[in-house]
Image (cartoon, one colour):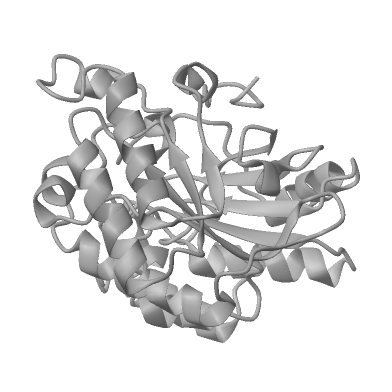
Length: 312
């Protein structure tokens, strides 16, 4: 029996319309929605992660909370051990008190930020954890690390408790969004979501004296093999619809998983010339803030969620 939600959040889970799928299921009765997660905390891992962008990880790393399930079906997902329907990967953390103790222990090591990874389908859980930590008198930065498939209303509801938005912008075209992630309407949904958080935070990424982000947006885009032109379209959309002043992390870390083995396009790493063409377009468009990656970065971003710390 889940008994730690307030009335509003309990109502959200009873008739779930948290994400754009708006399944309308009662998650207290099971995991029948698109995300296949119930009303529990659905946490697969709580760990220190030092592999994020410098402004997110800082010197000490970030305390990342990885949730199970997802409201997308990316066939190339790096976190497939925990994101796919019915996946049993990770080391589940189900008791709220244990979860809060684990996070507090990590924060006591000099880490300032708590990241919520793939949280679009578990907003009441995110709010419960944040409120629980604050009730202990803890001071921390909240980071919302999302695939971008979010409802504007949901993001607006989080505006007072999320400090740093860390969204993906995966596609600018419906065809690859549908083929690779099962969401044809992703470009419009993600763009509207990005516009909402841009309205909330603007272009400026505010950092502390150590360069750790305290408030703002850091937008991520993963370049896929064979799809440099799609990535160039994504950059054009951001430049036209948002701002070239926004901070962007342009990622080359794609690595093919077992689920794209023998795929005609995705069963390989990224070619250097593909990535360089996207970097060149980013520079041509006038983007002035952000990060690029080395071509061998894929070797460092392959988690194993059977471990206590998937990235060690």
